[in-house]
Length: 252
Image 1 (cartoon, one colour):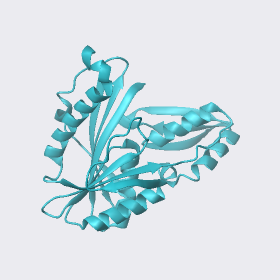
Image 2 (image 1 turned 90 degrees about the horizontal axis):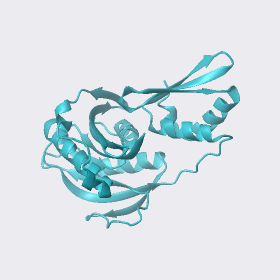
Image 3 (image 1 turned 120 degrees about the vertical axis):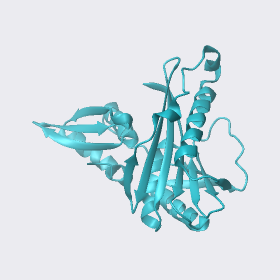
Image 4 (image 1 turned 90 degrees about the vertical axis):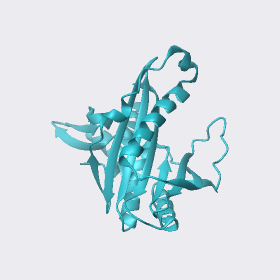
């Protein structure tokens, strides 16, 4: 299990679009997902110590009229892109770079690319060369492991954007949003852990195996996981999911 995980992503329009319209679609999508704006301005917000749990969403544009949203929260990226693509009449490209630090030194950085049209996502192949310079964290970097991991993510992401993205984006507006979800109360900690896995998964499904139900998860990178539930446990889980339409949509 990763001891530290970070990400960065760019959601860009595949053609000219008005930045105020993209911002409006972003605001509506984030409201649908339960996020509230806590900051906006032409300058980046000052760092907060300790972190306040808010995610940064930077609105960007280039001279050719393309616009984009830079996001530092991995879990919201594709849900946001899907909903925004349903609200606007141009396609979107998502370039996502994630990094994990395992144990004391082992680092994994992954670049991914998606295209969204009308709420439908297609994942495209990304060259492995973007992460060729990623290596284990050196011993003297462990004192600031988050910075060491961030440096590797940024390096891979810059390579990805140069090769796969649209050039010339500049920040036009900085915003922060915070999500305030009421954590469901489950009858067992195991259901709470399963809910966390569903929040981070690529997709999930339910199958019957005798008197039990099995929840099958597809995780990032293609790994799979299963959890066996009694019918009453599944009913409890589905009740909690009923207030999370973005998670229900991932059910296959």
